[in-house]
Image 1 (cartoon, rainbow, N blue to C red):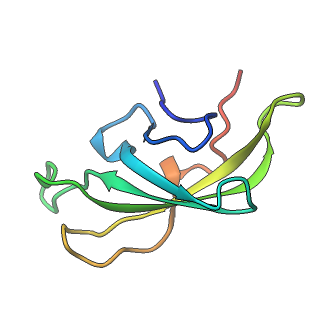
Image 2 (image 1 turned 45 degrees about the vertical axis):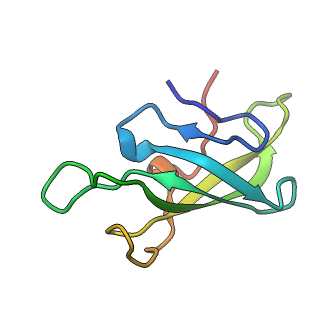
Length: 107
């Protein structure tokens, strides 16, 4: 079960999957504008399995303000993220959260 989606300035988002799908302690900037950015902490995979023991910085970008349902509230429908490949490393390329173009969830 997901957490944080459909809420204003969520401090935590979780797609309901493994620990890499959880971002905590998110601080948002420009919420309500065309693109909002957030910074939080997440787990990342080790190259040969498992997770690094400490959390790393994750940067989020929410965009595409729209509606998930015909009469639903205005919401960001696209979420992208960046994270390092190892603790202390540089941030990698932007990727779609959960690999989806839209974070809208069906009714």
